Structure formats: C-alpha cells, structure tokens
Length: 476
Image (tube, rainbow, N blue to C red; front, side):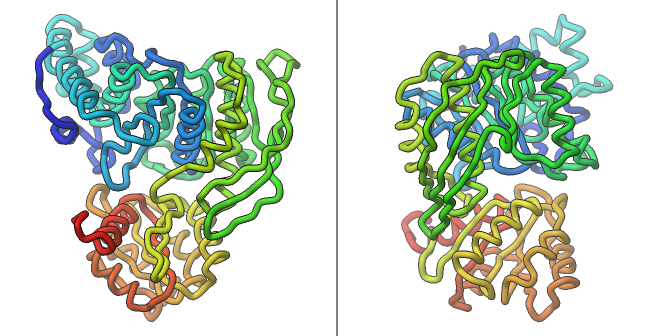
C-alpha cells in the first residue's frame, strides 16, 4: 500500500475535494448500493466490531456522545462517528471523546486512497455494475462522495485501532445514508421533525419512512417519543422487520428533574425491556437511577434515557451485564459535548447551542430563559433550508435584541433573507443585521447581558472560536 499522507490534515484536505452535500453540492442520486460496493472493496470494515446506530432529527449527537461516554466508562475502546464538528473535523471520527492517533488517521487515509484510486479504478475497467454506480457519465452514476468516503474512513480507523464497539449517527435521513451499511446490535431513533425536506420528503410520514430505514431485521429499536404520524410508521416497520420496539413513553419514566446552570439531575426508571419481539421475557428490573449530567436541559435527561436504554440492551446482547450502573453514572457525570448548551464565557455569560430545528430551538430558549431570564441577547444564523420564520416566532418575545449574522461559510445561507423574516415578526428596532460574526459577537457583548448563540452548528462553531481566542489569545 502506498504512503500518501503524513498528517490527518492532509487526509481531510484530500477528502474535501469530493462532492459534499453539506456545502450544497448534489450528486446525481443517493445510492446505498454505491456505499456497499465501497465496503466490498475495503473488505467490509463496518463489520469489525459490534455497533449501535443512531438516527433522528434532534438529539442524535447527544445520544451518540452519551453512549460513547458510558461504553468508555465500562472499559470499551469505542469508535465514535458524529457530525457536524465544532472546532476540528477530527471530532467527527474519534476514539471515545478523544482523537485517534495521527498514525491511525494517516494509515486509514492511505488505505482509503488506495481503495478509491487503485481498487476502484481496476474494478471500473471490468465491472459493468461498478461503472453504473461510480462513473459520472452513467445515468445515475457518481464518483464517491465526501460523506461516503468520510464514513469509510471512520470504519477503517475503527478497524485499524482494533476498537471494541462502534457508535455511529447518520449524517442525514437513514435509509440511504452512508452509515446504513451497518448491521447494528441495536438502533436508536430520536425525535422526528420536518428537516432536509428537499432530500427526505415534505411530510413527517415521508421523513419517518427515511429514518425507519435503519431498522434491521430481528434487531431491537429504541425510539424516542413521537407524534402519532411518525409513530405509526415506526411501529409498522418494526413489526415488518420483527424488531423489538422499545418506545420511550412505554418503558421509561423521568422524575425529580432539576435543571441548574451546572447541569441536570434526574431520576430514571426503566421497565418492560423485552428480550425479543416474539417473547414476553424481560430484562431484570433495576432500581431507579439517580443521575446527573453537566448539561442543562430536560431534553438532555430524555436523551440520556434513550442512551441508557440502548446501552442496557446492547450489553445484554453481548453478555456484558456487570457494573452497568457505575458506567452509566461515571460516563454521564463526565460527559463533554461541545455546542450543546455549552457555556463558553462567564462575563457576560455566553451560551452556545447547535439547535437548528423549531422544536430544538424552542427547548433551548426555554432552558436559557429559565436560567438567565428574558430580555437578553440572541445571536442567530441558520442555513438557507431551515425554518427561520418558525424560529423567529419562537424567539422574538424572549430577547431584547436579536442579532442576525452569517452561520459560517460551510453551508449555503441567506442572512439578508433571515433578517427580513425576523424584522417582519420582531420589528426593526429589536433586530440587527451584522453579517460578520466577529463583529456580531462584539456588539452583543457591549450590552453586558447574557448571550445565547443558536440556529446552526456552523454559527456556534464560529462564536466558540471567537470567544475562546478572545479569552486565550495564544489559541489564535
């Protein structure tokens, strides 16, 4: 195998040359069979370790991080795959909550490039099926995309590092997502909302159908509370796949929830965890768990309940049932998730949260106002495909100033249009348009009031860099 890369930066720079949906580039089609063909060329690294697969519109990143933290506390070497990143693209492909070694990224990158430039090239000379999948001149063909290759890089890293478990979240949707080559021990689907409608469908039913594509035959599904329209889709698919359905309202109860600036405390009771879809056997009952996570918000307690349920089922399936409570408590207590209601400054308090759908945005604002009061400052920016009007209606009465800015350059946005939308609802006296995010942060700080940055992970990533470089100039 050739030596192509000397650093992880070189690997990711090479990857950036491929089609990337996050940047608005569109391949001719989503093709899970193209990803399956890549897995075959790579000798199926997705099967190198047992896995947990997570999809959903909101909360999947938190669930992925929580599962990783608890499995790591249990002593497993966990390969974690999630998106987007906040400050470093390596955050997407991690060993636990830390980066893989530079050697692993480079070796995986070398293997990946060998697959795409040598093995795939050879296959295209003789294999008509590969030509139909990968040749841009074919009707539905396309070169491998950034997402497909990034996902393959994750699997290669996990295999090279001899990881015990893989925890992976989907990039978008589920059925045709590049991660759906996994055959997980257990799948998790978080709350479904209208999102990515240009790719996933215009109704909750259509979007739920795409997310339900991760449900595997005879493999259990942990499902967050859903509206009836989505729930009916998931129940139908789980029944067809003989997948045991663990529906949050039926198997979990949260109580004694206490939210403070320091985090969230709660009591979790689990019951009726059946061992299979066709069995009445249940996992042994356990005493209610008294838990604490260092992130404020009721929604994080709900995310933790989903993650704990999936963890218990996973460990039962692989016959690792001892010391589960210690791993749960230690993992959650030491949880670190950038840009999930993260306080990055004290004076004035600056909170950033990647909430970018109306429901997640609403929950974020309710948590922020419960801790810091109303009449503070909102810095907002969102991608062009997000529902800015709904988020304007949610936020306009809760803040004294709303600063609209550009949510980075990674995804297509239209801050002028977002500003016009907010002005119609909040008025022009309350709403400011400051396209330069660094200037927007400076203006917000002058009010000497608590600040919330939300609406896009790419926006809060920019705010985080600005604030941290301000506090720690050497980082710049």
